[in-house]
Image (cartoon, rainbow, N blue to C red; front, side, top):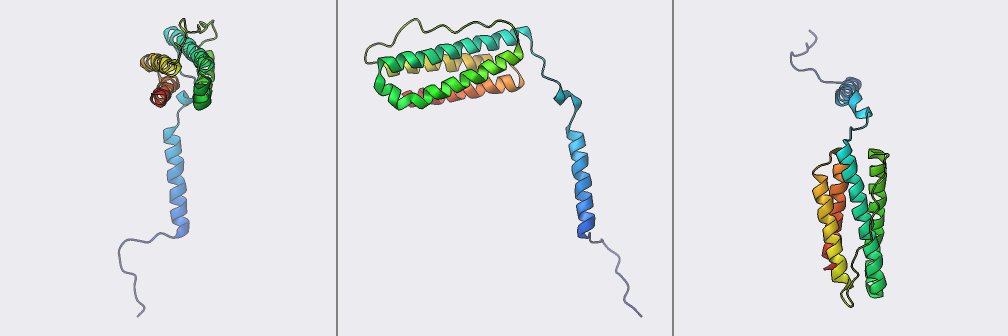
Length: 165
Protein backbone atom coordinates (compact mmCIF):
# COMPACT_ATOMS: atom_id res chain seq x y z
CA UNK A 1 0.00 0.00 0.00
CA UNK A 2 1.37 3.42 -0.92
CA UNK A 3 2.07 5.88 1.86
CA UNK A 4 -0.68 8.38 2.44
CA UNK A 5 -0.13 12.05 3.11
CA UNK A 6 -0.43 12.98 6.71
CA UNK A 7 -3.04 15.57 7.51
CA UNK A 8 -1.54 18.86 8.63
CA UNK A 9 -0.43 22.21 7.41
CA UNK A 10 0.42 22.51 3.76
CA UNK A 11 3.68 23.98 2.66
CA UNK A 12 3.69 26.83 0.19
CA UNK A 13 5.52 26.62 -3.06
CA UNK A 14 7.61 29.57 -4.16
CA UNK A 15 4.99 30.43 -6.74
CA UNK A 16 2.18 30.47 -4.14
CA UNK A 17 4.25 32.53 -1.71
CA UNK A 18 5.11 35.03 -4.45
CA UNK A 19 1.47 35.38 -5.49
CA UNK A 20 0.31 35.89 -1.89
CA UNK A 21 3.07 38.46 -1.28
CA UNK A 22 2.16 40.38 -4.42
CA UNK A 23 -1.52 40.40 -3.53
CA UNK A 24 -0.77 41.57 0.02
CA UNK A 25 1.43 44.34 -1.35
CA UNK A 26 -1.31 45.56 -3.68
CA UNK A 27 -3.82 45.58 -0.83
CA UNK A 28 -1.41 47.52 1.38
CA UNK A 29 -0.70 50.09 -1.32
CA UNK A 30 -4.39 50.51 -2.10
CA UNK A 31 -5.22 50.88 1.59
CA UNK A 32 -2.49 53.45 2.25
CA UNK A 33 -3.26 55.86 -0.54
CA UNK A 34 -6.05 58.32 -0.78
CA UNK A 35 -7.11 61.07 -3.09
CA UNK A 36 -6.52 63.68 -0.36
CA UNK A 37 -2.75 63.21 -0.72
CA UNK A 38 -2.99 64.47 -4.28
CA UNK A 39 -4.63 67.70 -3.17
CA UNK A 40 -2.40 70.48 -1.84
CA UNK A 41 -2.69 71.20 1.85
CA UNK A 42 -4.95 74.14 2.65
CA UNK A 43 -3.08 77.19 3.91
CA UNK A 44 -4.82 79.90 5.88
CA UNK A 45 -4.00 83.52 5.18
CA UNK A 46 -2.54 83.77 8.69
CA UNK A 47 -0.21 80.85 7.99
CA UNK A 48 0.86 82.39 4.68
CA UNK A 49 1.53 85.73 6.37
CA UNK A 50 3.51 84.06 9.16
CA UNK A 51 5.59 82.12 6.66
CA UNK A 52 6.30 85.33 4.72
CA UNK A 53 7.40 86.89 8.00
CA UNK A 54 9.82 84.02 8.53
CA UNK A 55 11.30 84.68 5.09
CA UNK A 56 12.02 88.22 6.30
CA UNK A 57 13.62 86.84 9.48
CA UNK A 58 15.90 84.59 7.42
CA UNK A 59 16.78 87.45 5.03
CA UNK A 60 17.80 89.48 8.05
CA UNK A 61 19.98 86.62 9.27
CA UNK A 62 21.69 86.26 5.88
CA UNK A 63 22.43 90.00 5.99
CA UNK A 64 23.79 89.60 9.54
CA UNK A 65 26.23 86.95 8.34
CA UNK A 66 27.44 89.38 5.67
CA UNK A 67 27.91 92.20 8.19
CA UNK A 68 29.74 89.96 10.66
CA UNK A 69 32.02 88.62 7.94
CA UNK A 70 32.91 92.13 6.81
CA UNK A 71 33.71 93.06 10.40
CA UNK A 72 35.82 89.94 11.02
CA UNK A 73 37.46 88.29 7.99
CA UNK A 74 38.71 85.47 10.22
CA UNK A 75 35.13 84.62 11.09
CA UNK A 76 34.29 84.65 7.39
CA UNK A 77 36.97 82.04 6.78
CA UNK A 78 35.86 79.76 9.60
CA UNK A 79 32.08 80.06 9.23
CA UNK A 80 31.50 80.50 5.49
CA UNK A 81 29.69 77.16 5.34
CA UNK A 82 27.19 78.39 7.94
CA UNK A 83 26.39 81.43 5.81
CA UNK A 84 25.92 79.13 2.82
CA UNK A 85 23.48 77.00 4.81
CA UNK A 86 21.56 80.08 5.92
CA UNK A 87 21.27 81.13 2.27
CA UNK A 88 20.00 77.68 1.27
CA UNK A 89 17.46 77.80 4.09
CA UNK A 90 16.32 81.20 2.82
CA UNK A 91 15.72 79.79 -0.65
CA UNK A 92 13.66 76.92 0.78
CA UNK A 93 11.60 79.36 2.84
CA UNK A 94 11.04 81.58 -0.19
CA UNK A 95 9.82 78.59 -2.20
CA UNK A 96 7.47 77.51 0.59
CA UNK A 97 6.13 81.04 1.04
CA UNK A 98 5.54 81.40 -2.70
CA UNK A 99 3.63 78.13 -2.69
CA UNK A 100 1.61 79.22 0.35
CA UNK A 101 0.56 82.58 -1.03
CA UNK A 102 1.08 84.51 -4.21
CA UNK A 103 0.69 87.86 -2.46
CA UNK A 104 3.31 90.36 -1.38
CA UNK A 105 5.70 89.40 1.36
CA UNK A 106 7.62 91.69 3.65
CA UNK A 107 11.25 92.21 2.74
CA UNK A 108 13.91 91.41 5.28
CA UNK A 109 15.57 94.35 6.89
CA UNK A 110 19.28 94.40 7.55
CA UNK A 111 20.13 94.37 11.24
CA UNK A 112 19.93 97.85 12.71
CA UNK A 113 23.08 97.41 14.72
CA UNK A 114 26.49 96.38 13.51
CA UNK A 115 28.94 93.99 15.08
CA UNK A 116 31.04 95.66 17.78
CA UNK A 117 34.74 95.73 17.08
CA UNK A 118 36.28 92.43 18.10
CA UNK A 119 32.94 90.84 18.96
CA UNK A 120 31.49 89.93 15.56
CA UNK A 121 31.21 86.26 16.45
CA UNK A 122 29.22 86.88 19.65
CA UNK A 123 27.02 89.40 17.84
CA UNK A 124 26.37 86.94 15.01
CA UNK A 125 25.59 84.17 17.51
CA UNK A 126 22.93 86.41 19.09
CA UNK A 127 21.42 87.11 15.64
CA UNK A 128 21.31 83.37 14.91
CA UNK A 129 19.61 82.70 18.26
CA UNK A 130 16.91 85.28 17.53
CA UNK A 131 16.20 83.75 14.11
CA UNK A 132 16.14 80.19 15.50
CA UNK A 133 13.67 81.18 18.21
CA UNK A 134 11.47 82.98 15.69
CA UNK A 135 11.36 79.97 13.34
CA UNK A 136 10.68 77.54 16.21
CA UNK A 137 7.83 79.69 17.48
CA UNK A 138 6.31 80.11 14.01
CA UNK A 139 6.54 76.35 13.46
CA UNK A 140 3.80 75.84 16.05
CA UNK A 141 1.25 77.73 13.96
CA UNK A 142 2.01 75.90 10.71
CA UNK A 143 1.12 72.40 9.61
CA UNK A 144 2.57 69.70 7.42
CA UNK A 145 5.61 70.44 5.32
CA UNK A 146 5.73 74.11 6.35
CA UNK A 147 5.96 73.18 10.03
CA UNK A 148 8.63 70.60 9.25
CA UNK A 149 10.62 73.14 7.23
CA UNK A 150 10.53 75.78 9.96
CA UNK A 151 11.36 73.21 12.63
CA UNK A 152 14.32 71.87 10.71
CA UNK A 153 15.64 75.36 9.99
CA UNK A 154 15.29 76.27 13.68
CA UNK A 155 17.19 73.12 14.66
CA UNK A 156 19.89 73.83 12.08
CA UNK A 157 20.29 77.36 13.37
CA UNK A 158 20.70 76.02 16.91
CA UNK A 159 23.63 74.08 15.47
CA UNK A 160 25.00 77.31 14.01
CA UNK A 161 24.59 78.94 17.41
CA UNK A 162 26.51 76.13 19.14
CA UNK A 163 29.32 76.28 16.59
CA UNK A 164 29.63 80.04 16.98
CA UNK A 165 29.94 79.70 20.78
